[in-house]
Length: 444
View 1: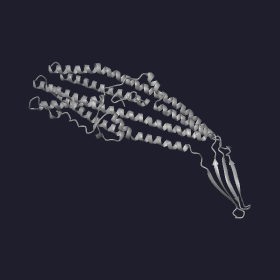
View 2: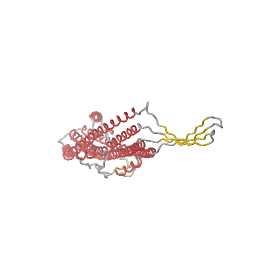
View 3: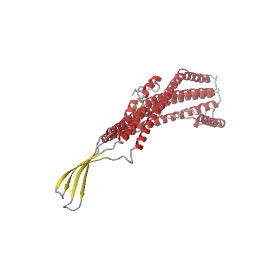
View 4: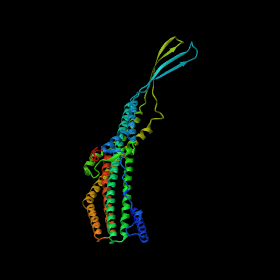
């Protein structure tokens, strides 16, 4: 992906390499005893052969189905949601009864033994509050699955587009290499005809060598993109062949009103609301604990001294003299306040992120329109004129190289803006958890 990036530092390095090749060519020409058209073998760099794809062609829907079935992160989220079923079941359980035995005196004639059952009676809606907390945790876990799935979908769409981008870079690099080869052939013919010095042919061969290098780097980026995509479901690079999709298809940006209507149903907002519900349920449990739970007892006492059984009834109630649970109640209330503020903060952050992605989508689409309608056709025309003028002796090869660099840079900008448009669209889908702006390759 970074193989065709045109950074200033990279440009300086390329110029240094070009000068070195030119110096070598001049030295060879100056010392050669053969004709002026015999160039150093090092300058003749053939285009590297393309490695055949071993995998089967893949669409975006194929990649999504594989990731949906085998992504470890999504599986973990699903297991987490399934675990909450046990928590909900446990929250519905009532306190277990207690079996107690006591004995008075050790002499058999005076001994009395008591067997009784003690049962705690929950008051104040503790069980209902406990169930409500478990239900809110279950809902939060399921919304986490939806959020994880939205993130996975973003990764799949983005990874698939990266693969399409890499393939597109190979196509452009192949065309660039063909153009460089044509220019080199034209320069060689003019050198043979004695119309230009051998330096022009050297420059042409250096340009062809650079084009071959970029083509090789572009093909390597395809393998990297395949590896990154296959990693989403634990697959192998060899499982992925050519990505099938229309990389040039872009989506229109949604309106501000459409985005506002979808904000409250976004996965992050749903998660924040569930966090608020959990804190409210926890606060309800702490409030319910203000009312102490009594313990009732029912048993039988055998008194050997009188020779009969006696029914034992009892009740015990804790006295909240030292611990009234005030601290836990205060803590739970403040956590509710915290969750409410986090919900508002989450909405503001989400709104800013969504509108930033929307603006990026609008900007990329506008630049794409300008590049396709004006910049690229003009650059292509300038290059064609420069090559034709060089063949006729009206321009130097430096003019051809400059026109070629401009054309290549325009192609790079076009690819970068296509990728930026796809990425911004996928980012909106991830933030909102929607598929309304789904990738147009397959419409998943």
